[in-house]
Length: 392
Ligand SMILES: *Cc1c(COP(=O)(O)O)cnc(C)c1O
Image (tube, rainbow, N blue to C red; front, top):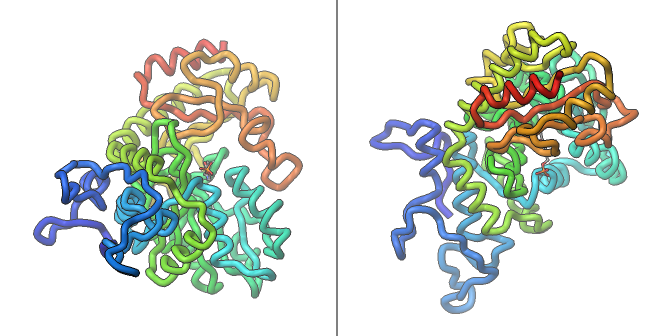
């Protein structure tokens, strides 16, 4: 496997820009055929040239597979990291990270607004293995600092967060982590590396559900870890192989294919979401719009500082409470009622009853009148008309 280095490839010393890296990093044309995209190496094992004579380091596809290698090198280059690792799902990636960096008795600070499955992993699984956790408002670095204990190993941050679109100042929390001798993990799923680069801001590890914007077409479930340093990357790679929840060849290929258009998609997602957030802000049936691109959003200034644009996720609170919110979700036609996010098609959901039902009764419970949109890349006028109709 080729060496992965900061910033990915370059021409005559001039580093390539993100869109170029997205299309080319890890993806030299196939030496045998010249195929311009990495083939799907749908294979479990590899002929050895004499015992231990591996070709290109490949011996068994849990340990490494060329299609997955292409994706892993691409991911590392996109995030400006040393090492990228691809998993069967975002939660498989999170589980591998947790079990690599935490031991029984260790403590993790988690945000009060996180993906429901992340919260469930800490509260229902890791806790049973003796990993302690406490909750901070990560939009306030002082709140994170207050939760630090002598045994704190990890500070976990999600920005923008799911589903409340809260913004964390990554550089400020990286300072808190450094002081505490803890690692800063940033779930970069909502922003994608096109909009935000946590490693450059001081994070140690980036987590992705590649199911979302990286894949971008609602046709694959996957996850990724990208590390700033090689030593942690190697430890994670050991655990990835030892625990085995790797991304398969076809899934890796789908994510790689999605990534080629990540930049243009994120531009359009962000443009469409901005228009929709503005329309909803002026709508009498909407109590509050949560979108970091709106100047009134509590995290707007930090978002401006650390993001290229504000992404495709918009949440809003419906006047009339839970039933009214559910009603809006049931009435849209173009916005498809469903979980997940980040695809080219627009989705709508009720977090309290759907994606975040597992946080009910906890510090991460979400408001009952909340609706979450994953704004797709359809023509924005069609999306605006659909929402206006559904709001009545
Ligand atoms: C979906 C999601 C995950 C979990 O990823 P899976 O691929 O569903 O396992 C983690 N974090 C965020 C922010 C997500 O949206």
